[in-house]
Structures are given as C-alpha cells and as structure tokens.
Image (cartoon, rainbow, N blue to C red):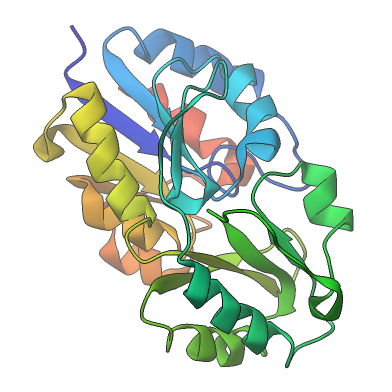
Amino acid sequence: MKNKAIIFDIDGTAVDSPEQRLPSEQLIQAIKRIKNDNFVCAATGRVWSFAKPVLQALNLSDPCIISAGTQICNPQTGEIVWQKNVDENALKKVLKITKGYPDYKLLYNDGTQDDYLYGGIYPKDISINEPVYFFEQVFVPDEIAPEIYNKFITIPEITCVMAVAQRPGMRDLHIINKSATKEHAVAELLKIIQIKKENTIGIGDGHNDIHLFNAVNHKIAMKNAVPELKKLADQVIWSVQEDGLAQYFNTI
C-alpha cells in the first residue's frame, strides 16, 4: 500500500533543460525502485505534448500535474482527469497587456518543446477562438519580466507565475486561472490518490514551485533553486547538474 506522495518539478529538477531533453538512467531506476511504496507524481509548467517524453521515459503511472497546475493527467495516456480554464474576459485583458510588449511571443494550450523553443505568435497576430487553460508569454528578459508581471497581476481572475525560461537571462510568464496554480492542483491530486498533506514531499527549483511548497508537508529545494524557494525549504539537496533528484530518491 502506498503511504506517501512525492511530487517533483521537471525543468531544473528532474532534467537540466534545455541541454538535457530526457531524464538520466539513474533517475529512471531510482523512481522504479520507490514507486511501489510511494505515489510518484510530476508537477510541471509543461503542457502535455512537451511533458510527455519525460513522463513516459520515467514510466510514471500515478496522476501528474501539467500545464502549470491547470491540468491533472494520466501520464501514460495523456487523459485529462481535472482542468481549470482561464476566464474569457480576463484573457482579453491579458491580450491587451501583451500588445504593449510586441516583441515577446505568446503560446497557449498544448504544444511541443520545439513549439516552445522556436514557435509562438506575436501579440499583433494572435487570434484565439477556443477555451484556454494555459497561456504564456515566453523568453522575456529578466529585467522586463517583473514589469509585465506587475501588470498581469492587476487582473483579479488570473494568477501570473514567473518561471525560469530555457534560455539564459529570460523568464516565461504563465497565465492561469486564479484557482489553478500548482498549489490548487496538488490539493486536487491528493483527493484523487487519497493521501493526506502530512504524507507529502514536494521537490522543485523555481518560483512556480513556491505554489507547490504551499501544498505539501516536506519541502525540498534543489541546490540550483532560486533563493526565494531555498528560504522556504526544509531541505536543500544536490543540483540538477549532479542528478540530485536521483541521488535523493536513492536515500529513501
């Protein structure tokens, strides 16, 4: 019987992206060893098609949080078991703000790693005619991201989360329903797997993992984590460059 839930981030925690596209064999084997006694779940800002190669390489079978906390999926099939959409009127306000920063591309809903790295739509060209659960402005320079962030957070129906981008000196700005952060998604996940908060471990490295830490009992930061997350951590482990997640799992 599984009595604990271990919930971990992907980028900067499980894989050293973008240099490392797939997890190490050491991590794969470490998860294989602990998954019989624990629920092992990813919680990532990646959307399904972007997360799928990592989730399936790790052979995860327990529900996973994707799309920055807006969805919970079956990691084997991609079936969505829980989802929160962005309010339509709030999204219009978001789009209006993005037009003031025309050089930074936009992505929404599902997409691959190549879509993230090389795709996107400029604000002047975007037209959305479907429900949106995940929206982001990508590769915003570190010095500009807080300015845009401060405008987004004036919209009460959404949450904006700054994440470290997969290019040096840049951030991604994730726009999600105010009730769909990693914190909210973990609460839903625990209902699904029937585990209490006191039996949870959360592991991450970025600003968006502050929401993950809010939802778990034992908080673990990677050595490469942002300072704000390390301050909240109960424990700091090895860096992602040292395959720290695998090393930690091998201590369990």
